Length: 343
Ligand code: F6P
Image 1 (cartoon, rainbow, N blue to C red):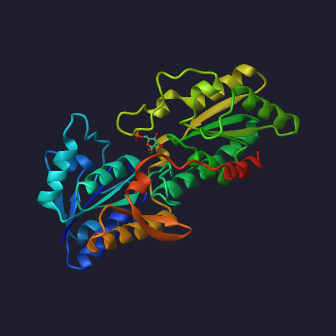
Image 2: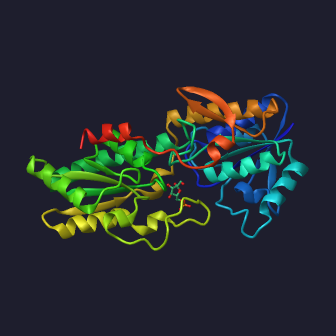
């Protein structure tokens, strides 16, 4: 079989472990492996597939980014990109493993519905793909958030300051909530459970009255500015391709400025940005990316197309792509309440 593999959307640590799992297992079994460059764009004109050998997979399990390159490529603008991809798959591949988030898997699902031999692999640093407990890159991201909070803790304590930390998280607050929980955040503000600036300031005042001379406030980049008393330029979008670049809205700085205006607090802001997406994956991300990559390969050679291996309760389950294609998995109330128990 000629098995293609691509990574689409934003990169995430662990992608190479998944690529390696697909590639080395396929080569072991005597299949041909085709690396598609730069996501869907490598299957739209011009075709950018390249035959991979064992040398391509050497030493990459712990390497961040993606050896294939990736892109936020819009197949619908100009129109017709999806049909070009459908044709390219038919012409060049017997199977395609598409590693990506909800935008990528919506395309995978569309292609599979039209008979293309596609299997997905769940990846999003935001951890909000529907139906799965695990997405490639999330563990590395929250480890970076936790380490950053550890570092900010000592300087915040020394200066008796409020440190506002903005994390990634386009539509949901998984990175902020679990990174914040692991790093001992004193307040976590996420899209799922909106807060006003009055709520935030009141919490900081209460903490100070209780003898806490400093506080660390974690804010997800996707928090709606309107709920904080600000304005949005337009409707917030969760669409990866043409969406608002959320970090440019400066939610963290907005919150910090309002706290500062209240008076009585010395405030500093840190935007973690793409540090959360760079560097080596954690062991957890390497292991689970390998497991979902291997499961996708097994599905492809078994002809189980239109599917995606998801992680549920510590086990891998092969599910239809339609399960992940629409909507986001949101932080549940009980998990946020657990975070809040330590504010
Ligand atoms: O969707 C994953 C994500 O990391 C978001 O958290 C973030 O808003 C976005 O990607 C940033 O994308 P880009 O690298 O294209 O600016």
